[in-house]
Image 1: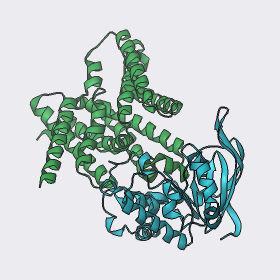
Image 2: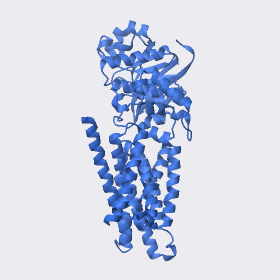
Image 3: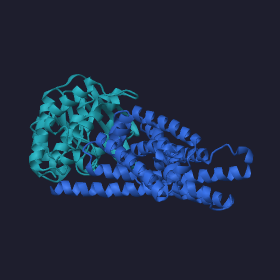
Image 4: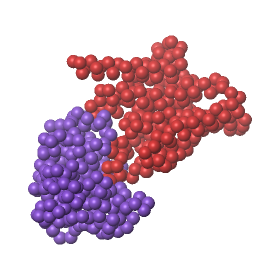
Amino acid sequence: MIFTFSFMQQAFIAGVIVGFLSPLVGLFLVVRRLSLIAEALSHVNLSGIAAGLLVQKNFPAFAFLQPLYFGMFFSLVGSLFVERIRRLYRTYQELAIPIMLSFGMAVGVIFISASGGFNADVAGYLFGNILNITVQEVKMISIVGLIVLLVIVLLYKELFALSFDEEYARLMGIRHHLINGIFILLVALVISISIRVVGSLLVSALMTIPVASSLQIAKSFRQALLYAIIFAELAVMIGLIGSYYLNWASGGTIVLVSVCIFFMTVAVRRWIFRG
Amino acid sequence: MMNGQAFLQVENVSFGYGKQYVLKDVSLSMYSGEYTVLIGPNGSGKSTLIKLILGLLQQQDGQIQIQRSRVGYVAQQANRGLADFPATVREVVASGSYGQIGLLRWMGSKHWQGVERALDQVGLTEFASRKLSQLSGGQQQRVYIARALMSNPQLLILDEPTVGIDVQAKEQFYQLLKQLHQQGLSILLVSHDLDEVISDVDRVLCLNQSIYFYGSTQEFLREQKELLPNLFGVSTIRSIL
């Protein structure tokens, strides 16, 4: 049984947490047509990780500072910038996304080249390597995950109101700038903890594909949340086990399973409508 | 109809972009239980006035006095991009109470009872568990009225709510507004359907950057032959588009 290995247990715990939280924030992003923000922040996160690797290489005294922490810090700062840039434009708010995405990628490439170019460490963050996750990283993922879950539960109704009809939410007195600011910070945190599971390049996939599947069959917002979480968890479990036995990259396998689930939900929906 | 103090007072309000005025020196008062229809040609500043009253825009001159927590709002159907939003009618109506419940608090049984009451008022109880996108345009607008009712409003403001809705649904919609008015709700309706609502409303407000006419329905009907050609270029309310 593969779960007797401690590295698989760590991978399993991290995967379950990320599989729960990614679609949870992902649904709010998708219904607000902001799913590409995850893409932008994951690139900013990568630049932070590259900065962390550079610091580890050049300043051995700071080796205890995990690149993931740098990534998290960069994403949090980047998320605040995304929100500020969004407010600059009334009708072209999505412009914030390519600006931050390009910025993150540019800084990331500079730091990666300064730290000696692409190596196994960088590849691990780019494509995910959940099977090499450490106990310390699992602890960090658990704590951050708990904070994100708690905040979403507490702000669920405000997030729903803002997602459904931002203008009406403002009329009701919901503090939209505050809630939007907190939400984008949560997105940055979830991206930071998902990097080790699916990698920087695929992190937005786990936020959007299970949601896309869920939207095919959900009849309510709560159902959409529930199905998205179930589909993401299924993708993580099947992907993890598959990647172990097939010796495939874990991130890619998880996302591939997620895409398969998406096509199955499309087929199920078509079948129901024909029926 | 003018019971006590006005709960909406707009005094000498002006608003514009640059030197171009959209609204100039507009004053009006609404009293409890009043049903007023606001008409005017396209670009006359109707939606701007509504947004100023709602606090979505800030006036450059003048004053607006209103208790905004007691105002419900229904926007134009055509302005909504919510066709595929994965929410049930009940979830949407419930969201109308979220502002009043406040941060870090959840819906209680009292609020859920309010949801069922609001759904009953707009005649959508049997559709409560349906997805919003499965409802017709007219039914969706009734959902938004139910959402607005969740904040227990004194005043319901509707900005051209029947645009894009078929004739039969329009009639049912205006019938619902009439019922809500009879139950004591004050209504400010922006509409081109003057012919359909003229027998229901108490006052008519004609706007064309500034107030062109503001008076009782009877006064309006007496003066319509002079007002309508100047304002809309037509001679009867049936011809207003």
